[in-house]
Image (cartoon, rainbow, N blue to C red; front, side, top):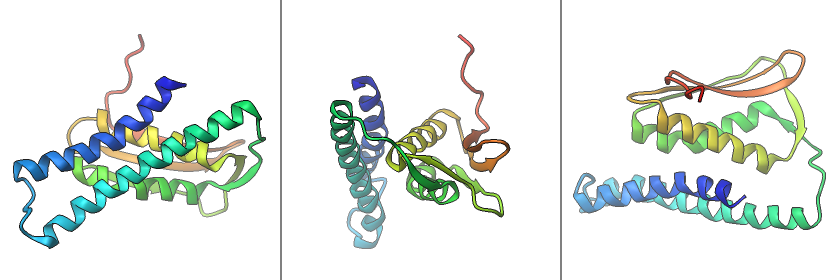
Amino acid sequence: MLQAVAHDLRSPLAVASGYVRMLREGAIDATSSDAMTSPLDVVEEKLAECRRLVNELLVAARREASPVPANVVLNLAEIAERAVDRAWPRALLVGAHLAVETPQGLVTARGDPADVDRILNNLLANALEHVGERPRVTVIVGSDSTPFISVADDGRGIAAE
């Protein structure tokens, strides 16, 4: 569990650190309040994401002590769109094309919204970090016999070993 938490915290911390480094190195005009607004917004957002992850860790610890069934009906298209919105700052930073594909009809599933958000955050962060230059990442919502959300990218994939 500690390994998962460390992994979850690494991505937002890396983004926030990257913006601070760009500010220090002069890659962002620190003399212009307009130029500073967006980077500072991203840093603030990523630090808030870290706080959310720490809160989720506390919730997970409480669940471990007293499990709660994850039985909430989720609108998968809304969840996917929120995840992409959260990933936009990172996508802009790496020059990625980020998209969502959803079907016309409503696709629902039962689960824990915080867990699904966390999983999608991880998948998107990994896709944006490991696919190379100008990645294309697409979040796809669908339902064949089972509702699903998938994250597809144009990277080389994970080695079989």
